[in-house]
Image (cartoon, rainbow, N blue to C red; front, top):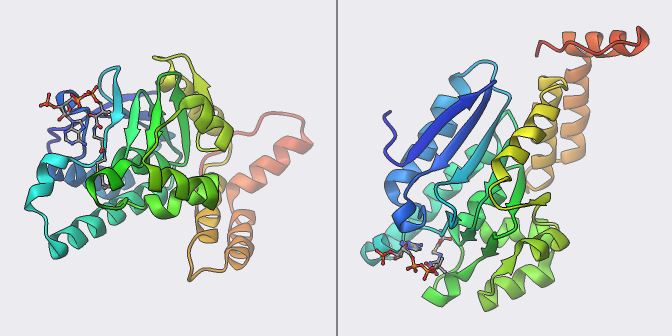
Length: 260
Ligand code: CAA
């Protein structure tokens, strides 16, 4: 698929995915959602040796300012539910990716933009980042997982307040509440995200994918996260990486993991 609204670059096994609709503050229109679905559902799983993905927005003003409000006028109840379902499908692909996905939040992350950042495994905020779920201003609710993921990160009290008031919070407040992992000077978000992925890439890749799987299991109503952990722990002990990791410890050398 040729991407119109996504720019993809690669450096040393790390993919940098930039949402590129700068004039619309990188709002997620239908085309962009299709492209994200293709990237995370088809392109990424077919790539070997990817260490991780950084998701960011074009320009210095916005990460993503939400779903594209200009496409909203065509919605009715059925089409709205369809749109919500597609958003959930795409963002679950991100959350369930087998490699770390880090959001580099370079400005406004509102509505679907905040939800996109929350679907990623970790978030780096530039000092100018602003987070919020302002959907009630439009008479709707968050539709791409925000009602669930915001409270997973910051707890029910503050999440319900932010969703009901549509208030925006700055990077420091987002850090204080536990929504973001690091705050960095504006313009340094992608570098910090790359640094984090490089650090993780030194670990066993199968173990990293199992961490993602088991942590996600906690939030799935039909999963027993503890049972999933037992299974995944067993699976990791059956890998060549585990033999290598344990041998490296005993031989007092760095492990050379192969993802096998
Ligand atoms: N959809 C479509 N276009 C958008 C947009 C959006 N979500 N956000 C900004 N834009 C466009 C503006 O329409 C404007 O385009 P024009 O120049 O063609 O008029 C351009 O981006 C620049 O925006 P502003 O002039 O508004 O810039 P500003 O600096 O004055 O304000 C802002 C910035 C506070 C982010 C403001 O643009 C804003 O409030 N945007 C909407 C945020 C929002 O409500 N997001 C939630 C959408 S609903 C949703 O996401 C539902 C869901 O859960 C899936």
